[in-house]
Image 1 (cartoon, rainbow, N blue to C red):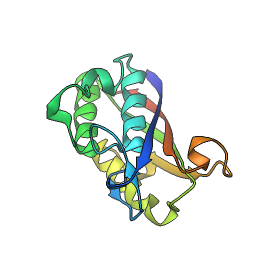
Image 2 (image 1 turned 120 degrees about the vertical axis):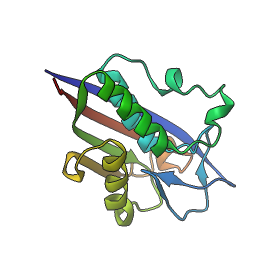
Image 3 (image 1 turned 90 degrees about the vertical axis):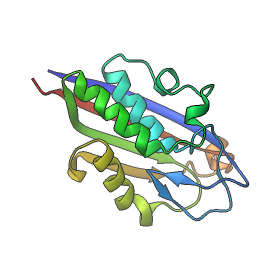
Image 4 (image 1 turned 180 degrees about the horizontal axis):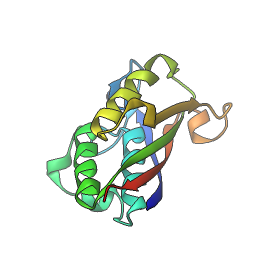
Length: 159
């Protein structure tokens, strides 16, 4: 049995924050605003995994009203989500992600993002795809107001 899930997340860019994507700190004049480290890529991945098993989303699991998650490392949260899906008898088949932002250029960081996600999701890097695109200056991502990410995953039953 396989299950498919989709995740989407968006965060506003702001000064005075670090830019963390896929667990990688990327040099940039702005970072993402959020309760945790605001890693939109990893948040979309977690939502896709939780959605595949109809377990809600990260807001339900790690609410922004809970001070325990203030500034939280999203890769550590992804490890918790991986434990949850494992406890339910599933493992990652594959995850395909797209990050949407005008800048910075993400190509130099994608391999490390894939490594980080694969490690946290307890799977091989060959099962993780991360792509980046711009929106040609259109919309909130194109004007540099924020960054968005989509993720689709397939979970396979282990039993």
